[in-house]
Image 1 (cartoon, rainbow, N blue to C red):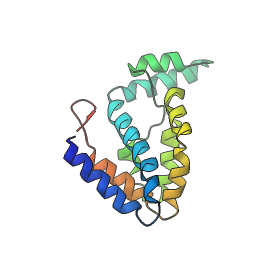
Image 2: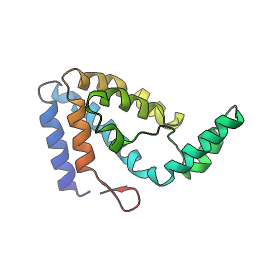
Image 3: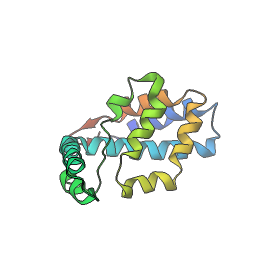
Amino acid sequence: MSSQNLSTLICAIAELLRCAFRQADYGKVILPFTLLRQLDCVWPLTKQAVLIELETCTRQGSADPNVFLTHASELKFFNTSPLDFDKVLPLLDHVHQNLRVYIHGFSSNISDIFERIEFEKQLDGLARPKLLYKVVRKFAERLCCTNGGAVG
């Protein structure tokens, strides 16, 4: 994504947040969503393999499937949720709940990041003024997944 397109996205998100958040807090929304969208664009290439491996580990009663899931993802993280941006977005009335399920599906090395930046607190703040759907939609539209997972 070009810096001009990124600037346009940030301005569009800031305009949405204007009435519900202080300007100093915009980054608390924009940064985690940028990270989430980047992760969303990277892992779909191995998503199905992770979900199959999770099913296998569950069926076999694996005590700690993390090693197997990380291997299946071919990355240093994984997500066990069947959801992604494309599946969260159309569910207008359930975006908040489904986004939480999606975030909780990440491996601990990623979920720790979201916990430390208190992302769920920001989700709650966005849900009250019903901005969450609009913000997710902007990120989905403007930060498109292309080139085998890169955001562009």
